[in-house]
Image 1 (tube, helix red, strand yellow):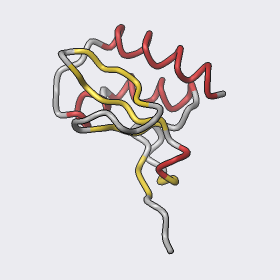
Image 2: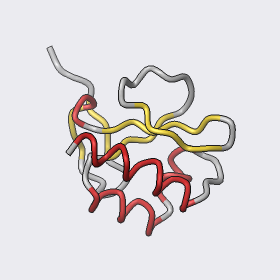
Image 3: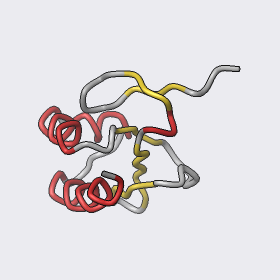
Image 4: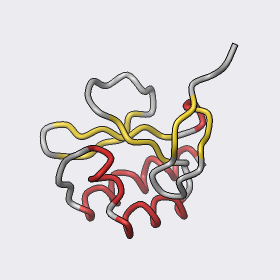
Length: 86
């Protein structure tokens, strides 16, 4: 049986869904969804600072979520979550 695969918005490499950090846009803010249960469109990132930096530089998270996001807010929210998972 195959496992779900998603693409990291930072490095663009494919990985197992459960190895990636899901991010959702809710009420105009981007927040991490570590349990992967929040409703709405999601974007996925490897829990690595390098992938977060690439995604922010390319503005890939906003494109993946199909919304406008504040890069500073995204960076602050995700750096804390990535630090927990590392």
